[in-house]
Length: 307
Image (tube, rainbow, N blue to C red):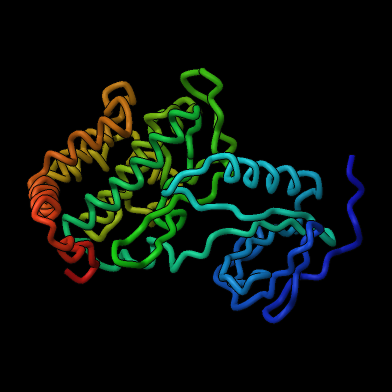
C-alpha cells in the first residue's frame, strides 16, 4: 500500500512539473478541467509542445485515483495507433499523477455546431472505425465514445484521435463485460437492459456520434432526464431518427444503432466496408488514384469543415 503524501500543490500556468525520470514540463494555458483534474498545454525538454493531463485525488481515495491513472497510462502507452492519442510520458510526483500526451488542436466537440459535409463525415468515421477495430482486435471495448473524447489535429488532412481509455474494458476473450460506468446519453441498449457491453457497444456509441456529425444534432433528447433518456434508448429512438433521414450515411448509421447488438454490423471493419461504397467516398478515392497514376500532386483535401 502506497502512503499518500501531504495535500498536493495544484499545478498552475507558468509552473514547472519535473518527472522523476528527468524531463521538466513548463505548463501553459489550461485546456480543460473536470472531476478527474485538468489538462494544460505544456512545453517539454526540447521545446516541443505537449498536453499534460493532471489527475487530482479530490474526494476520491488516493489509491483509487492512482489505480485509475495507471490503468489509463498503461493502456495508452501499450495501444499505439495513428488514431489513438499518443502518450509520451507518465509519472507520479508530489502526490499528483501526470500523463504527457501528444498535443492536439481541439476536440471534435468544438466542430459540431453545424452538420459536416458528407465527405468529412465519412473520413472522420473512417479514422475512428480504424481505431475501434484496433481496440477490438486487442480485446478492448472503449465504452466512452463521444465527441469530447475525440481529439483533432489540423493539417493538410484532418486527423481524428481517440482519447480517454480510463473506463475501457479488457474482454480477455469473453463476449462481454460490465463497464464500471457509462454516461446515460451514450448508453447502448444492452448496457441499459443488462449492464454489459460488447464490441458492438462501441459501434452503437460511434453511430450516435456519426449521426451528430451528419445532422448537427444529437439523436437523443438529453434534456429529458435520466429516465427519459433511457426510455428513448429502449424504444429505439436513435435508430428511428437515422432511418428517417433517408440518406446513405443515415442508412449505415441506422444499422449501427439497432437495439439488439447481434443485429448491428459485426465489426468496425464491416461498417467501413459499407461506408466506402458510398459515392461521396468512392468518387474521391478514384480521383486520388488517377492523380497518383498520372504523377500529379494529390488534389487538395476536401476534408474541410467549411466545404
